[in-house]
Length: 81
Image (cartoon, rainbow, N blue to C red; front, top):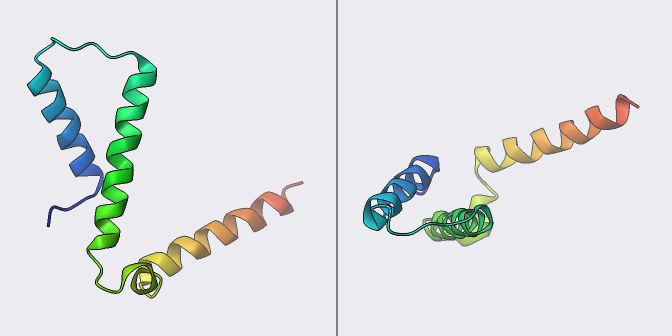
């Protein structure tokens, strides 16, 4: 499978630009929808890379670290009142 990280998003933007060769103009809203669609696709493909699905992802250190950072961020926000 393809690595679906930020480098993949950058490569897709470059490919879209090359394919359109300036023939397609998009407004900011359309660019946002395209970018969001690519990121949603990448998120789904990243999840598909784990045979156990979301349950397996939740057992990874990266997931646990991300949850801890979110929880700490909320605590920091509450203590700065």
